Image 1 (spheres, rainbow, N blue to C red):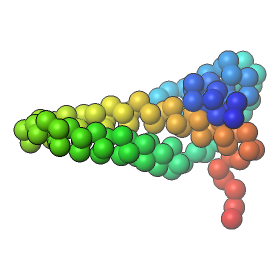
Image 2 (image 1 turned 90 degrees about the vertical axis):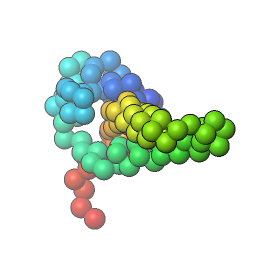
Image 3 (image 1 turned 90 degrees about the horizontal axis):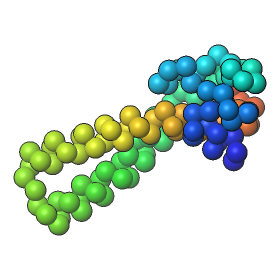
Length: 115
């Protein structure tokens, strides 16, 4: 659980101090503090899946509540909710990728295992 928490902060899952990311979603090849190899971990589709799942479960009920309570104009709904979903997605995706990388590191997975 500690490695996931460190990853959610976008820090190295091993030491919790070095940066795990070299960019928005690109992992550093290795931690600058403890030299743990991070670039070989491939989180692939799980972070976007989690992002879509969470954003959908937040935005859809909010949209329905706003529609049922205040009945805003259609153009307001069609402007507001895509922006909210986009902002949530862009905020959550790197955090969730960090958490998944932390989980994979803790389990000793690299993402290239054969079935």
